[in-house]
Image 1 (spheres, one colour):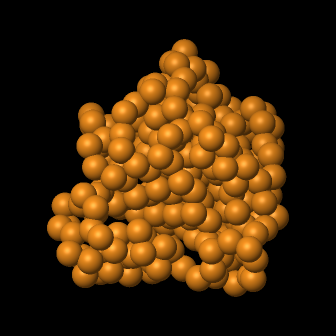
Image 2: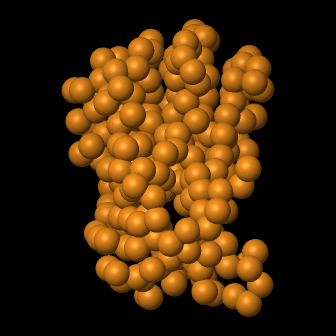
Image 3: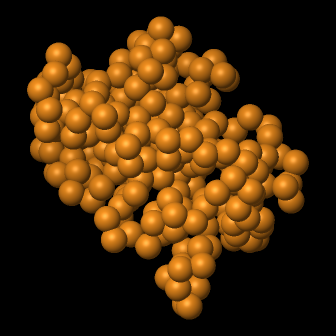
Length: 238
C-alpha cells in the first residue's frame, strides 16, 4: 500500500558543506514515523504544474528512533529545480507535503556476509542511517566497509561521524577517497578501493548508492570480480 501524503514542517537547517544542507523535518500528523534504514521519502514541491514533475525523492539520513523527525541531506545541483527550491525557498517553519517511507534498499536480515557500502556524494545518507541503526540496536555482522568517493575534502559529508563509528563499531572501516585533490588519504575513485579489498574474494554483499556513472561502473567491476549479480544492491540518484 502506498503511504498517504502528509504534512512536514522544517524545524532546523544546517550547512553541511559549501553546497550541501541538512534539513530536519517534523511530521506532526504522526507521533512515530516508522521506516527501515535506507528508505526514502518523496516530497511534492511547488515547482511544476504536473504533479509527477514536482516530486523529488531523498534518502532519510537519520535512523529510526521512535520519533517523528527525520533528517535529509540535499546537495544543490546546477539547474536542479528541486534542490534550487530547497536552497532558495525553504526556511525553518516551511511546510512541505511528503509521503513515505519507500524503497527496498535496506540492510540484509541478518547481516551474514561482509558488507560493502559504496557511495558518492549524498549517497552516503542511507548508509549513515544504517550505521546508526546497527550501533543503536547492537546488530551482529562480520565486517563493514564504507567507501565514500568525492572530489575534495570540502565535499566530505559526515566525516567526523564516520571516523567516530570506527571507534564505536568493531570491524568497521571508513574509506574516504578523493578524485580531485591531493591529501594524505586515499586518492582516485571508489572502484580501486573495493577491488583491492576483494582481492581474495570474501563472501560479500555490495550496496551501491550515488550517481548513475559510479553505479554502472561498479556493477560491471563487481561482476568481473566473480560475484553474482544477486550480491549487488543499488539505489540510483539522478
